[in-house]
Length: 168
Length: 159
Image (cartoon, rainbow over all chains, first blue to last red; front, side):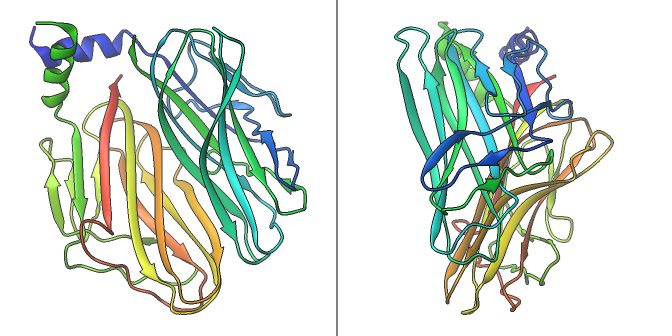
C-alpha cells in the first residue's frame, strides 16, 4: 500500500462531516446584535451529518459539537432576505465555547457594508481551526442596520459545513 | 517515517487539486443574469479536472467532498446597485444548482471584488463553475491576471 492509498483509507474511515442549511428562517435582530444563525436541515447533498454532531433548530439554538479533538475546516454562508438600512454593516462571527474551560471565544469572519437599502446581504467565510472534543461551536450573524432582518433560506443560500481534517 | 512526514508526503502526492486563472481573457458581466467567468490559463491540474474557455469549470473525477474558492474583480462604472456571485453546479448528484456566496450593494465608482468559498459533495461527472451577476446598470468587464480572476479546487475527502 503506497502513501496515497493509506491517506485515502484513513479518510474513508474517518467520515466526520456535518453539512446543514436553513430552510425556514428566523428573525435576526439589528443594532449590533450577534444572533445564532438558525440551521434546521441536514444537507445530504453536501455530506450529511452521519454522526449527529449538529443540533438543529429553526429558532436560534443550532450548534455543532466537536466529536474529537482535531483540526477542522469549516465553511459557511449566511445572510438576510430583507434589506437593511443604508450605511449599515453585516458580519459573521464564529463562537466557540470551550469544553475544557467553559469560556466562550469569538472569531470575527468578516464584516460587509450595505450602502443603500436596495439589497440583501450574504456573508461567506471559512476557518481552519483546532477544536477540542466537546467544544460547542455556533455561527452568529450580526448587523447594525437598526432593523430586524429575516435570515436567508435555501440550500444554496444559507449553509454551514464542518469537516474533520485530521484528529490531533 | 513519522506521521507528519507521511502526511506531508501523501498530501503532496494527492492528485485532485487544481487552479486556473484569466491571463488575457475577460468576462463581460451582463445585467441580471449570472455570467460564467472565463479562464484561459491552468496553473496546475494533475488530474485533468479543469476545462478552460469556453467551458470554464471543474469536473469531479471521483466521489468526494470538495472545496472551491474563486475570485474576480471589476469596476462598477460609477453606478450603484447590487452585485453577487455564485458557484454554479450541475450533474447527477447536484440538487443545489447555485450557491449565492457574495452579495452586497455599492454606490459610486468602486472596484468590486467577488470572492467566495464552498464545500460540496460531488460524484464523478458533476460540474462546477463560477458565476457573477450584477444589477449595476452597466456591463462591466472583469480584470485579468492571476491575482484578480482565479478558480481553485481541492478534494478534502474521498467518499
